[in-house]
Length: 314
Image (cartoon, rainbow, N blue to C red):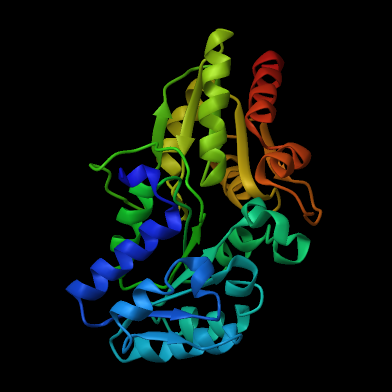
């Protein structure tokens, strides 16, 4: 099986096992959702002395991880995105970010990818709240190659970090040569008509949108941001100075996440019109990813439509 044919959570598990084999300080923590993350049973069976399931106690998992990191361990702790951020936010703030303990927090099934678990498990604000936290880095991989490189980068980093983890199989964007750099956005398509800025799941949608637009002789420059914080300002400005129009799309609320980061940069350095696609200040609902992305307004067709409108309005 080719790497890109695997579920992202399977590649996350593969990489964690590789890291634990290479480095006896790497440990894996779960909060009763190891099967959903992909680490149970494989990591548990391979390294029973370095796998810790704390039960349904996410805040406690963050505190335990902080203690382990403070003693020189490299803890990766995973759970559903709302539990990894909203539920444990104070423990992360004080014990991890404020104390500068290099814990690696993994929020699984971000946004609409939690699908039929519904609104209570559908977190649309994790990028915003984690981005607002001092000392915290915030990452969103778009495919298995980026995920693998990102996890390995995190294991070597001395920073507190948060990463979204889509669990299912997604189409490849990169290849084995990919090397993650949190300070470097990736220009996936060159263009001069409109700049499209995406991260994670919406990068996949935007690839389709850009192809649709090319058939209409609209040339979008597509920038993928694997890191929402730190944020690569230079790549954005270089593109926008050409296109003079921006569309952002994210599997998040339009308030405070990727679109917020883009607007903050442009307001300070190069003001232009920005159309933010994402969740419009509402909760989610039960449904599959295709239905939810269409209902919430950030699928490939929505991105293409917004680009047409921004191009026409220039």
